[in-house]
Image (tube, rainbow, N blue to C red; front, side, top):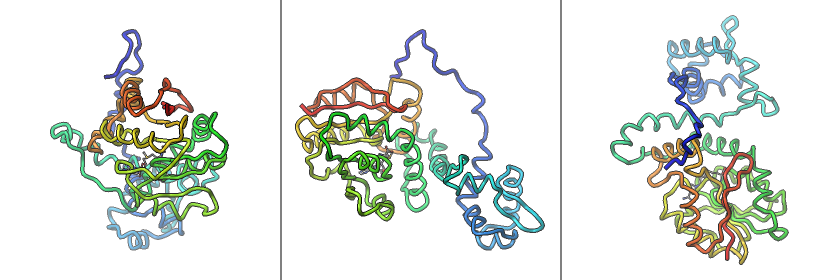
Length: 323
Ligand SMILES: C[S@@+](CC[C@H](N)C(=O)[O-])C[C@H]1O[C@@H](n2cnc3c(N)ncnc32)[C@H](O)[C@@H]1O
């Protein structure tokens, strides 16, 4: 349960959020339909754009007109093109306005969140399988989220470990943390699902000491020994049974004095973890956000000494040192 002190009011209901996010829905639909990518290749007439994207011309015109009004597109003579802002936001990685397409992960999640009333009735998640564009958006969103704090978090994880430590990065497929671990002298094994490894392997410089292994961490971990097992936002995908098994197996693959670091949202510490728990309720069989006491018990039972929560770069980290 959320443990707020009686005197502490952290959030009040936000009725300004009771609105249809129309701009987001229009942009998300345009990305899904390939409209921006088509115009990134060059300006088009409406007929050309309809032909290239496979859209109905009347529907396309209504959406294009809204995107012109919102500042994403220009319409001059009969030619439709991206505005400078839209180019900067979606495509120019060097621009301060750059956002990329990571936001499509949130857009894709909307359809499952809309089924929350049904999930509340059945207690069962919405069936879904991420592939193609959805998988790419998910990985982009993960990379972007992680990039902000990765340097500080990696420094915290590696502090006092031997030089050139062996690191197992469980669910590290987006590569964000692995690239920083390597920069700091580590040799990294990443375990992720076959689809994510297939998607990301072509982006990996083969000269780097990073080994990407396809697998399922609820089944088995790649053999160690390691100095660090890093669990970045993976414990919330599963429940107690899977996490206890994961911690036990991590302990078995760690050197004496090696450590496990859990980076996740800790239930009972605020709104973020409570709300994210709903995301896991809707999208996973057994996932959720877990309290500090749950992590502490599961880690101690797996043979770790457990630290208090450390807040690093806005993230919550719990470390277990192998006894
Ligand atoms: C929420 S993302 C976290 C990514 C990264 N560690 C971070 O903190 O930004 C979870 C990652 O775990 C991977 N994953 C989920 N379930 C898995 C499983 N059973 N076995 C292996 N990888 C899994 C996903 O493919 C994804 O790359």
